[in-house]
Image 1 (cartoon, helix red, strand yellow):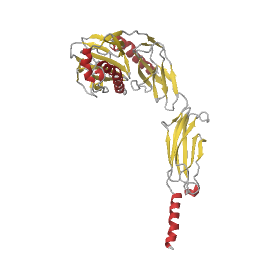
Image 2 (cartoon, rainbow, N blue to C red):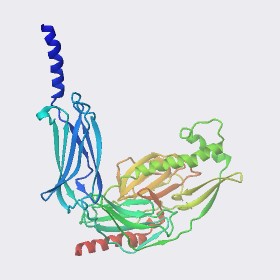
Image 3 (spheres, helix red, strand yellow):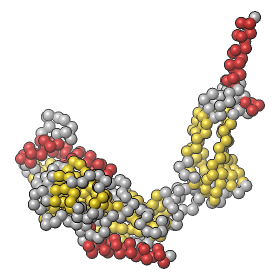
Image 4 (cartoon, rainbow, N blue to C red):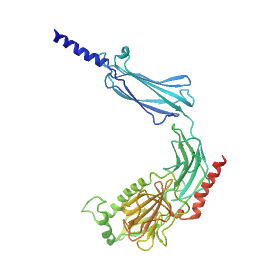
Length: 449
């Protein structure tokens, strides 16, 4: 008798404990910011591992008026089994203007129920409220700087102000975006952006300021600019067996193994593939520039040095009279006496200091707001990452490491991840006209307003 009763009571107790379970469902809202713009999708993930999902309801409340954004009843697997769905992701399109809402604060309300028999068969529920701000107006952009004359392969400075704090702002140059930097001016809405025009970008390159506010509203603003076309030198480089025999062994650990490869094939793998890999390391080092302008006035050139190769030289490589490769030289080669001390071209912080493939021993300095200098083929490195340097501090000595044919310094300048012509930054007059005078003008304008 007792055993028979247990056979009935225990399964019934287990069944009731399952159907009357008290665990509330889980609701997760994926919303990057607390702003709702002109149009966006709300991503809501809901879970209930036990009874299953019964219903999801979402509404938007503002000024006493509420609009239902979503109301879905999920299917049952049967009276005794609960819900057939235990997790799902719902995307809800929200366009506040079409829903009749004006800009301002609102409340996003979300409720999810499960198939538990709790609360008189209504189930367990999770209720979530989130304060949001409806913002459907794009930011306004005012360009403060003037006279944007840019050389092909050169640099420039654009200063602009936005009407509100923006999620992203900067200058688009062709396919490359250069972020704006706040903090230099007293007004936190005034941004300073150094831009670069690649050596391959001509007069048809489109340049404009763009901004995106926290609600995702986009704005663009054009400004006057003039691109000066430049013709870059063509250079012929003969690769000798002596050079290959001397240099290729240095790269044995940096190229794919293959005993059948000829010295020329190995050279091409280095000059092409390793060059690309090295650029990726350079780009990574130049990703996060300090929000501070460390440098002042013109940049230093290696003292008592002669120019051996120029910026954006289009090089054609020959082996025994046969053309084997073409590359572009992204810096200026400066030669002095062997093992010459190399000064920091301007004040900055060391962000890279190690051997870098074709560039050999290399140092990269961050000068702030996206401007970097690079020193390659060094015989020695006298600084370490994180060192803060003054202009003229000795950072190493010239050498012939990497794919260098003789002792020299390969000097490069980059804005963010784009190489630019160092000659401009050695010119005091160019810096005054294109950088410092713009900054002074922007300061005077922002103070008046």
